[in-house]
Length: 292
Ligand code: BEZ
Ligand code: FE
Image (cartoon, rainbow, N blue to C red; front, side, top):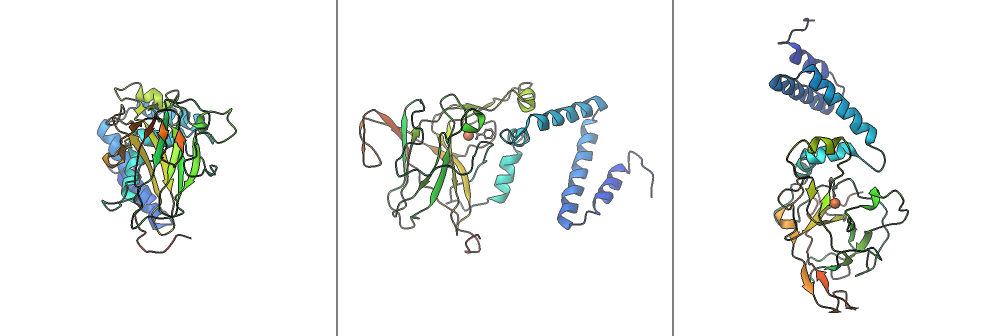
């Protein structure tokens, strides 16, 4: 074996990691070593900087638990999470684009009927209906829409340890004609958690730590690619500086002001409200086979 020099070290490390037992692991690890070594060489990484990076990674792990995932947040603000979504969900131009899941989705939300209010008595900046499309030729009945959002103070249920019941999240189902109707409070702009190592790093830059007003949707229908996406409120602040690179033109929706009176679910509503419409278009699965 050749002894180590500055010149041969990177090649030696790549060769060593190429012995991984699975070909994919070998591919992942050799590329990682190549890029890490190239990075250290490019910036001429100092020992102090390397130690600071290790400290930052340690703090990121320490602050993470089953409710808070600081590594995901780090991946989000570096644009890596969105890149991974882009690489793995190359839908047709007609399909609704996917975007990041984010750290605040909670499994097992309660079911809600057509037009049911998932905000209950939570104070918000107004009431907001999100009715589905007019019946369409390819409308899909019985599709579950898993919906979640932050409250008017920008807090998700997952960030409120004292909450022990579902809050601003619910499972809606499309009717026979493919329509759905969600009622909730208007979403607002949202600041990512800034009290951890990610916030510390961001605060040493000019990066805005805000996300534009949005509601999250997860639609998992057999025969179609799972769609994880958001809808963003047209005109909201931070649309073009979203700190996690999640905004897409196709996902920006107009919220129109409606007077009190008849409501989109066929009932009545006694105060003015906001209304938005969006047709989700799912990408058929390549094989045509439903997932197990
Ligand atoms: C969010 O869904 O609001 C979110 C996504 C990524 C990072 C932080 C927050
Ligand atoms: Fe969010």
